[in-house]
Image (tube, rainbow, N blue to C red):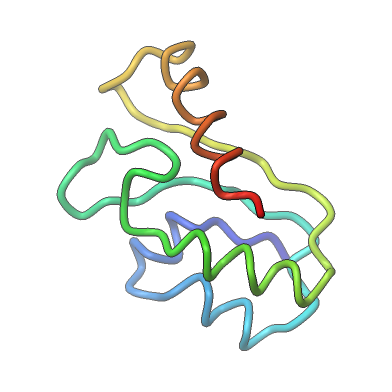
Amino acid sequence: MQVDTANVLAGGGDPVQCLKKHPGRAATMHLKEHSASNPSALLGEGDVDWRGLLNVVETQGATEWFIVEYEGDGVPPLVAVERCLPNLRAMRR
């Protein structure tokens, strides 16, 4: 399966609990931010529990690919990349 972090949250779910409920099944993941208060939030700036999510991913060891995704009009695409990349690096252990 492929988990999309923002879509899980937008649907009222919790991506961390989704991964725990289906261990070892998320071969790929769309890492996309979700924010109830800021639709232009970039990776690491919203409501996703990135530390919890990455901890579960590391312990399950099934995810081979992360696809960083940004869909929004609030930030130009190259600016979004420039901001998302350091946020992603800061999430690593």
